[in-house]
Image 1 (tube, rainbow, N blue to C red):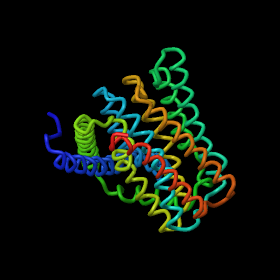
Image 2 (cartoon, one colour):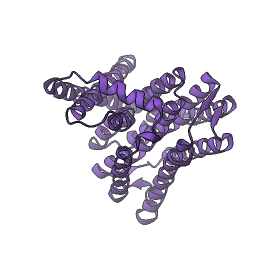
Image 3 (cartoon, helix red, strand yellow):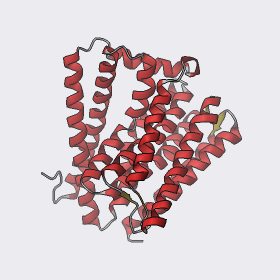
Length: 338
């Protein structure tokens, strides 16, 4: 059964409904997983650090994994590269401009953002290495295995993170998630876990089916729609957490959420999807150009954080938003036949 119709507007409705179901299903899945973890005496801190970080990346992971099994690698590339670029330029840009000054801890500066950018560079190296040996730009199963192994190590590293290195806001978020699941029974946890998983699968299918249909109907590459529309939609959880962090003056949570989500997007999603089927960056050139834009956005964030030392200023937010406008202009030109 295909979740699309011959009518464009109705497909837009199906896409939005699928996105909403996917995001809500992801929330329930993470809550249920936190409830089960709590039943096995996993600490609140560990639940918050791991599940909150992975939770905001779950919509991209679910839709990309479904696309891998359905053999639509261009959707995966657009979804992940587009989401990461959107997270850095649009989501962070909005957060910085909104609050005027976004403070961050030394831990984010000397560790997390460098790990994120290092993962970006590793991904580009794997793509170019595959090009040298096989003639096409893609991440093969060996590359997928490397990224997945690093993802496992990164999760293990978060599990071992000492409490004194964690901000009050991170502890508060961990406590909130743990408290929300305190009174859940095993039956309710597993029921919510199953329901969330079903919603994630159905939402992912609805999104993929409508995007593939729309790309064929409009004569636009699937990767372009994924880079713009899908990437923005799947970045809604990061936007929500960033705005919440800025509003509560939990700046580390706002910035750390984006950095952590980007790292998991590459390691977990590109890694597992490449194990299912090698992820090609396409023959149109859009995939490689957007990979370059992602690297520039990541480098810009690192440079801004090192130049500003302990805060991102509104001028930096404006620069990030300008970069998003360039990214959007490059991809949207396809809609007008350029």
